[in-house]
Length: 359
Picture 1 (cartoon, rainbow, N blue to C red):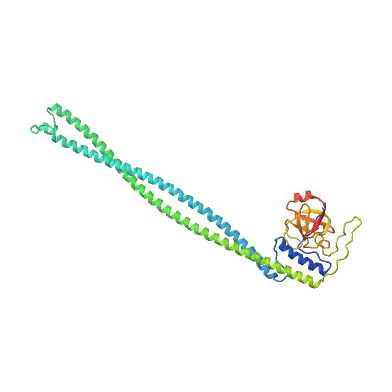
Picture 2 (picture 1 turned 135 degrees about the horizontal axis):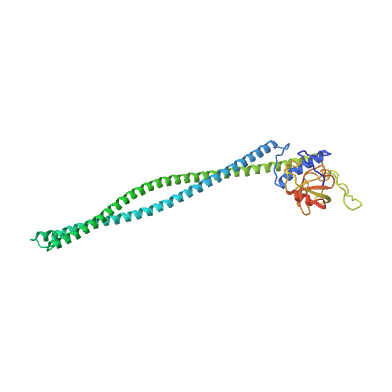
Protein backbone atom coordinates (compact mmCIF):
# COMPACT_ATOMS: atom_id res chain seq x y z
CA UNK A 1 0.00 0.00 0.00
CA UNK A 2 1.40 3.37 -0.98
CA UNK A 3 1.93 6.14 1.55
CA UNK A 4 -1.25 8.18 2.00
CA UNK A 5 -1.45 11.90 2.62
CA UNK A 6 -4.41 13.28 4.58
CA UNK A 7 -5.16 16.86 5.41
CA UNK A 8 -7.92 19.07 6.67
CA UNK A 9 -8.70 20.48 3.15
CA UNK A 10 -11.43 19.09 0.97
CA UNK A 11 -10.41 17.94 -2.51
CA UNK A 12 -11.66 20.43 -5.10
CA UNK A 13 -14.62 19.12 -7.06
CA UNK A 14 -14.79 19.37 -10.83
CA UNK A 15 -18.21 20.87 -10.83
CA UNK A 16 -20.32 23.04 -8.52
CA UNK A 17 -22.91 20.28 -8.20
CA UNK A 18 -20.36 17.89 -6.68
CA UNK A 19 -19.51 20.44 -4.02
CA UNK A 20 -23.16 20.79 -3.04
CA UNK A 21 -23.65 17.01 -2.96
CA UNK A 22 -20.60 16.62 -0.71
CA UNK A 23 -21.91 19.30 1.64
CA UNK A 24 -25.31 17.64 1.90
CA UNK A 25 -23.91 14.17 2.52
CA UNK A 26 -21.35 15.41 5.06
CA UNK A 27 -24.17 17.03 7.01
CA UNK A 28 -26.06 13.75 6.95
CA UNK A 29 -22.97 11.90 8.16
CA UNK A 30 -22.77 14.17 11.19
CA UNK A 31 -26.15 12.80 12.30
CA UNK A 32 -25.83 9.24 11.04
CA UNK A 33 -22.57 8.37 12.83
CA UNK A 34 -23.06 10.71 15.83
CA UNK A 35 -19.87 12.73 15.31
CA UNK A 36 -21.07 16.35 15.70
CA UNK A 37 -18.85 19.11 14.40
CA UNK A 38 -19.22 22.82 13.77
CA UNK A 39 -21.24 23.58 10.65
CA UNK A 40 -18.91 26.22 9.24
CA UNK A 41 -20.37 28.20 6.43
CA UNK A 42 -23.92 26.88 7.02
CA UNK A 43 -26.77 28.77 8.69
CA UNK A 44 -26.14 28.94 12.40
CA UNK A 45 -22.46 28.10 11.97
CA UNK A 46 -21.31 30.66 14.54
CA UNK A 47 -23.87 29.36 17.02
CA UNK A 48 -22.69 25.80 16.38
CA UNK A 49 -19.10 26.83 17.08
CA UNK A 50 -20.23 28.57 20.27
CA UNK A 51 -22.21 25.49 21.36
CA UNK A 52 -19.24 23.23 20.64
CA UNK A 53 -16.98 25.44 22.74
CA UNK A 54 -19.57 25.49 25.54
CA UNK A 55 -19.91 21.71 25.43
CA UNK A 56 -16.12 21.31 25.65
CA UNK A 57 -16.03 23.73 28.59
CA UNK A 58 -18.86 21.84 30.33
CA UNK A 59 -16.95 18.60 29.78
CA UNK A 60 -13.82 20.05 31.38
CA UNK A 61 -15.82 21.39 34.33
CA UNK A 62 -17.55 18.03 34.76
CA UNK A 63 -14.19 16.27 34.74
CA UNK A 64 -12.76 18.66 37.32
CA UNK A 65 -15.86 18.33 39.50
CA UNK A 66 -15.63 14.55 39.29
CA UNK A 67 -12.00 14.63 40.45
CA UNK A 68 -13.00 16.89 43.34
CA UNK A 69 -15.80 14.47 44.20
CA UNK A 70 -13.30 11.59 44.32
CA UNK A 71 -11.12 13.68 46.67
CA UNK A 72 -14.08 14.43 48.93
CA UNK A 73 -15.03 10.74 49.00
CA UNK A 74 -11.48 9.82 50.04
CA UNK A 75 -11.43 12.42 52.81
CA UNK A 76 -14.89 11.30 53.97
CA UNK A 77 -13.72 7.70 54.21
CA UNK A 78 -10.76 8.82 56.30
CA UNK A 79 -13.03 10.85 58.58
CA UNK A 80 -15.34 7.88 59.06
CA UNK A 81 -12.36 5.63 59.81
CA UNK A 82 -11.20 8.15 62.43
CA UNK A 83 -14.67 8.15 63.99
CA UNK A 84 -14.59 4.35 64.12
CA UNK A 85 -11.18 4.41 65.84
CA UNK A 86 -12.40 6.96 68.38
CA UNK A 87 -15.48 4.87 69.08
CA UNK A 88 -13.26 1.84 69.69
CA UNK A 89 -11.10 3.89 72.08
CA UNK A 90 -14.20 5.13 73.87
CA UNK A 91 -15.47 1.58 74.30
CA UNK A 92 -12.10 0.51 75.70
CA UNK A 93 -12.15 3.51 78.01
CA UNK A 94 -15.63 2.61 79.21
CA UNK A 95 -14.47 -0.91 80.02
CA UNK A 96 -11.47 0.46 81.94
CA UNK A 97 -13.74 2.88 83.81
CA UNK A 98 -16.15 0.11 84.75
CA UNK A 99 -13.26 -2.06 85.99
CA UNK A 100 -11.81 0.86 87.95
CA UNK A 101 -15.14 1.63 89.61
CA UNK A 102 -15.57 -2.02 90.57
CA UNK A 103 -12.08 -2.12 92.10
CA UNK A 104 -12.72 1.17 93.90
CA UNK A 105 -15.94 -0.12 95.42
CA UNK A 106 -14.11 -3.28 96.52
CA UNK A 107 -11.33 -1.24 98.14
CA UNK A 108 -13.90 0.86 100.00
CA UNK A 109 -15.61 -2.28 101.28
CA UNK A 110 -12.24 -3.70 102.44
CA UNK A 111 -11.45 -0.47 104.29
CA UNK A 112 -14.86 -0.42 105.94
CA UNK A 113 -14.65 -4.11 106.90
CA UNK A 114 -11.15 -3.65 108.35
CA UNK A 115 -12.27 -0.69 110.44
CA UNK A 116 -15.28 -2.60 111.72
CA UNK A 117 -13.01 -5.57 112.66
CA UNK A 118 -10.57 -3.34 114.54
CA UNK A 119 -13.41 -1.63 116.37
CA UNK A 120 -15.00 -4.94 117.30
CA UNK A 121 -11.71 -6.29 118.66
CA UNK A 122 -11.15 -3.14 120.71
CA UNK A 123 -14.60 -3.43 122.26
CA UNK A 124 -14.03 -7.15 122.95
CA UNK A 125 -10.89 -6.34 124.97
CA UNK A 126 -12.85 -4.11 127.31
CA UNK A 127 -15.86 -6.34 127.56
CA UNK A 128 -14.10 -9.67 128.30
CA UNK A 129 -13.04 -11.14 131.73
CA UNK A 130 -13.82 -10.36 135.36
CA UNK A 131 -14.84 -6.79 135.95
CA UNK A 132 -13.16 -6.81 139.49
CA UNK A 133 -9.76 -7.86 138.07
CA UNK A 134 -7.99 -5.04 136.22
CA UNK A 135 -5.93 -7.52 134.21
CA UNK A 136 -9.06 -9.41 133.29
CA UNK A 137 -10.80 -6.19 132.36
CA UNK A 138 -7.91 -5.00 130.15
CA UNK A 139 -6.65 -8.23 128.74
CA UNK A 140 -9.35 -10.78 129.40
CA UNK A 141 -6.79 -13.17 130.95
CA UNK A 142 -6.46 -14.96 134.36
CA UNK A 143 -2.62 -14.69 134.65
CA UNK A 144 0.30 -12.52 133.61
CA UNK A 145 1.66 -15.14 131.19
CA UNK A 146 -1.71 -15.57 129.58
CA UNK A 147 -2.10 -11.81 129.43
CA UNK A 148 1.33 -11.40 127.73
CA UNK A 149 0.53 -14.15 125.24
CA UNK A 150 -2.87 -12.74 124.52
CA UNK A 151 -1.46 -9.22 124.22
CA UNK A 152 1.09 -10.44 121.66
CA UNK A 153 -1.59 -12.15 119.66
CA UNK A 154 -3.75 -9.04 119.71
CA UNK A 155 -0.78 -6.91 118.63
CA UNK A 156 -0.03 -9.20 115.67
CA UNK A 157 -3.66 -9.24 114.63
CA UNK A 158 -3.82 -5.46 114.89
CA UNK A 159 -0.64 -5.10 112.83
CA UNK A 160 -2.09 -7.33 110.13
CA UNK A 161 -5.30 -5.38 110.11
CA UNK A 162 -3.33 -2.13 109.83
CA UNK A 163 -1.34 -3.53 106.87
CA UNK A 164 -4.57 -4.50 105.14
CA UNK A 165 -5.99 -1.06 105.90
CA UNK A 166 -2.91 0.76 104.51
CA UNK A 167 -2.91 -1.34 101.34
CA UNK A 168 -6.60 -0.76 100.85
CA UNK A 169 -6.11 2.99 101.28
CA UNK A 170 -3.16 2.99 98.85
CA UNK A 171 -5.20 1.07 96.32
CA UNK A 172 -8.07 3.48 96.81
CA UNK A 173 -5.78 6.47 96.15
CA UNK A 174 -4.45 4.88 92.96
CA UNK A 175 -7.92 4.05 91.80
CA UNK A 176 -9.10 7.60 92.45
CA UNK A 177 -6.19 8.98 90.40
CA UNK A 178 -6.95 6.46 87.63
CA UNK A 179 -10.60 7.51 87.72
CA UNK A 180 -9.60 11.16 87.27
CA UNK A 181 -7.24 10.22 84.42
CA UNK A 182 -9.99 8.25 82.72
CA UNK A 183 -12.31 11.23 83.03
CA UNK A 184 -9.74 13.47 81.32
CA UNK A 185 -9.24 10.90 78.56
CA UNK A 186 -12.98 10.64 78.07
CA UNK A 187 -13.28 14.41 77.77
CA UNK A 188 -10.46 14.48 75.19
CA UNK A 189 -12.11 11.68 73.23
CA UNK A 190 -15.41 13.53 73.31
CA UNK A 191 -13.76 16.63 71.83
CA UNK A 192 -12.01 14.58 69.10
CA UNK A 193 -15.24 12.74 68.32
CA UNK A 194 -17.18 15.99 68.05
CA UNK A 195 -14.57 17.41 65.67
CA UNK A 196 -14.52 14.22 63.56
CA UNK A 197 -18.32 14.11 63.36
CA UNK A 198 -18.50 17.77 62.33
CA UNK A 199 -15.84 17.16 59.67
CA UNK A 200 -17.74 14.13 58.36
CA UNK A 201 -20.99 16.12 58.19
CA UNK A 202 -19.24 18.93 56.29
CA UNK A 203 -17.72 16.43 53.85
CA UNK A 204 -21.09 14.76 53.30
CA UNK A 205 -22.63 18.14 52.55
CA UNK A 206 -19.75 18.95 50.17
CA UNK A 207 -20.20 15.57 48.47
CA UNK A 208 -23.92 16.17 47.95
CA UNK A 209 -23.25 19.65 46.59
CA UNK A 210 -20.56 18.40 44.22
CA UNK A 211 -22.78 15.56 43.00
CA UNK A 212 -25.55 18.08 42.30
CA UNK A 213 -23.05 20.25 40.40
CA UNK A 214 -21.99 17.28 38.26
CA UNK A 215 -25.66 16.51 37.55
CA UNK A 216 -26.30 20.09 36.45
CA UNK A 217 -23.21 20.12 34.23
CA UNK A 218 -24.18 16.80 32.67
CA UNK A 219 -27.70 18.05 31.99
CA UNK A 220 -26.34 21.24 30.42
CA UNK A 221 -23.94 19.22 28.27
CA UNK A 222 -26.76 16.95 27.07
CA UNK A 223 -28.86 19.99 26.23
CA UNK A 224 -25.96 21.53 24.30
CA UNK A 225 -25.47 18.29 22.35
CA UNK A 226 -29.17 18.30 21.44
CA UNK A 227 -28.90 21.88 20.24
CA UNK A 228 -25.90 20.94 18.12
CA UNK A 229 -27.84 18.00 16.67
CA UNK A 230 -30.72 20.34 15.80
CA UNK A 231 -28.29 22.69 14.04
CA UNK A 232 -26.87 19.76 12.10
CA UNK A 233 -30.38 18.79 11.03
CA UNK A 234 -31.06 22.35 9.90
CA UNK A 235 -27.77 22.37 7.96
CA UNK A 236 -28.73 19.12 6.23
CA UNK A 237 -32.11 20.51 5.18
CA UNK A 238 -30.53 23.75 3.95
CA UNK A 239 -27.89 21.94 1.92
CA UNK A 240 -30.48 19.59 0.40
CA UNK A 241 -32.74 22.49 -0.53
CA UNK A 242 -29.80 24.33 -2.12
CA UNK A 243 -28.86 21.22 -4.09
CA UNK A 244 -32.41 20.80 -5.41
CA UNK A 245 -32.51 24.48 -6.40
CA UNK A 246 -29.15 24.64 -8.22
CA UNK A 247 -29.11 21.15 -9.76
CA UNK A 248 -32.53 20.02 -11.05
CA UNK A 249 -33.09 16.36 -11.62
CA UNK A 250 -31.84 15.01 -14.92
CA UNK A 251 -32.45 11.63 -16.50
CA UNK A 252 -29.86 9.10 -15.46
CA UNK A 253 -27.47 8.07 -18.25
CA UNK A 254 -27.72 4.48 -19.47
CA UNK A 255 -25.63 2.02 -17.51
CA UNK A 256 -22.76 0.47 -19.41
CA UNK A 257 -20.39 -2.27 -18.51
CA UNK A 258 -16.81 -3.11 -19.34
CA UNK A 259 -15.76 -6.26 -21.13
CA UNK A 260 -15.32 -8.00 -17.75
CA UNK A 261 -18.94 -7.20 -16.85
CA UNK A 262 -17.99 -4.68 -14.10
CA UNK A 263 -19.65 -1.23 -14.27
CA UNK A 264 -17.12 1.51 -15.03
CA UNK A 265 -16.24 3.91 -12.20
CA UNK A 266 -18.57 6.93 -11.94
CA UNK A 267 -17.23 10.31 -13.00
CA UNK A 268 -18.53 12.56 -10.28
CA UNK A 269 -22.19 11.53 -10.59
CA UNK A 270 -24.29 10.37 -7.70
CA UNK A 271 -24.46 6.68 -6.86
CA UNK A 272 -27.72 4.80 -6.54
CA UNK A 273 -28.77 2.97 -3.38
CA UNK A 274 -28.06 -0.74 -3.70
CA UNK A 275 -25.47 -0.22 -6.44
CA UNK A 276 -22.41 -2.45 -6.09
CA UNK A 277 -18.82 -1.54 -6.86
CA UNK A 278 -15.78 -3.79 -7.02
CA UNK A 279 -12.95 -1.93 -5.32
CA UNK A 280 -9.41 -2.41 -4.09
CA UNK A 281 -9.44 -2.02 -0.29
CA UNK A 282 -6.66 -1.23 2.22
CA UNK A 283 -6.56 -0.18 5.91
CA UNK A 284 -4.97 2.83 7.60
CA UNK A 285 -4.52 3.81 11.25
CA UNK A 286 -3.47 7.49 11.16
CA UNK A 287 -4.78 9.76 13.94
CA UNK A 288 -6.29 13.21 13.67
CA UNK A 289 -8.98 14.67 11.43
CA UNK A 290 -10.21 13.61 8.01
CA UNK A 291 -10.38 15.70 4.86
CA UNK A 292 -14.02 16.46 5.68
CA UNK A 293 -13.08 17.73 9.13
CA UNK A 294 -14.46 14.74 11.03
CA UNK A 295 -12.19 12.94 13.50
CA UNK A 296 -10.96 9.54 12.40
CA UNK A 297 -12.61 6.53 13.95
CA UNK A 298 -14.38 3.27 13.17
CA UNK A 299 -16.55 3.57 10.07
CA UNK A 300 -14.41 6.26 8.38
CA UNK A 301 -13.41 5.49 4.79
CA UNK A 302 -11.12 7.32 2.37
CA UNK A 303 -12.17 7.33 -1.29
CA UNK A 304 -11.71 9.16 -4.57
CA UNK A 305 -14.47 11.83 -4.49
CA UNK A 306 -14.78 11.70 -8.26
CA UNK A 307 -15.79 8.02 -7.92
CA UNK A 308 -17.36 7.78 -4.45
CA UNK A 309 -18.39 11.30 -3.31
CA UNK A 310 -17.73 12.39 0.25
CA UNK A 311 -20.67 11.54 2.48
CA UNK A 312 -21.55 8.31 0.65
CA UNK A 313 -22.43 5.48 3.01
CA UNK A 314 -21.42 1.95 1.97
CA UNK A 315 -21.48 -1.59 3.31
CA UNK A 316 -18.05 -3.26 3.25
CA UNK A 317 -17.77 -7.06 3.60
CA UNK A 318 -15.83 -8.02 6.71
CA UNK A 319 -15.79 -4.40 7.98
CA UNK A 320 -19.39 -3.21 8.27
CA UNK A 321 -20.91 0.11 7.36
CA UNK A 322 -18.60 3.00 6.48
CA UNK A 323 -18.88 6.56 5.26
CA UNK A 324 -16.69 8.29 2.70
CA UNK A 325 -15.26 11.14 4.78
CA UNK A 326 -11.54 11.19 3.84
CA UNK A 327 -9.29 11.39 0.81
CA UNK A 328 -5.70 10.55 0.01
CA UNK A 329 -3.16 10.96 -2.75
CA UNK A 330 -2.95 7.18 -3.22
CA UNK A 331 -6.72 6.68 -3.12
CA UNK A 332 -7.74 7.06 -6.76
CA UNK A 333 -10.37 5.41 -8.89
CA UNK A 334 -12.05 2.31 -7.49
CA UNK A 335 -9.88 2.31 -4.35
CA UNK A 336 -10.94 2.68 -0.73
CA UNK A 337 -8.96 2.92 2.50
CA UNK A 338 -10.72 1.86 5.74
CA UNK A 339 -9.69 3.24 9.14
CA UNK A 340 -8.79 0.76 11.91
CA UNK A 341 -7.44 1.45 15.39
CA UNK A 342 -4.57 -1.06 15.20
CA UNK A 343 -1.63 -0.29 12.90
CA UNK A 344 -0.61 -3.95 13.12
CA UNK A 345 -4.05 -4.94 11.85
CA UNK A 346 -3.81 -2.37 9.05
CA UNK A 347 -0.46 -3.79 7.93
CA UNK A 348 -1.73 -7.37 8.09
CA UNK A 349 -4.83 -6.50 6.01
CA UNK A 350 -2.75 -5.66 2.95
CA UNK A 351 -4.76 -5.02 -0.22
CA UNK A 352 -7.95 -6.92 -0.93
CA UNK A 353 -10.51 -6.87 -3.74
CA UNK A 354 -14.05 -6.39 -2.36
CA UNK A 355 -17.52 -5.73 -3.67
CA UNK A 356 -19.11 -2.92 -1.68
CA UNK A 357 -22.76 -1.88 -1.67
CA UNK A 358 -24.03 1.70 -1.69
CA UNK A 359 -26.44 2.38 1.19
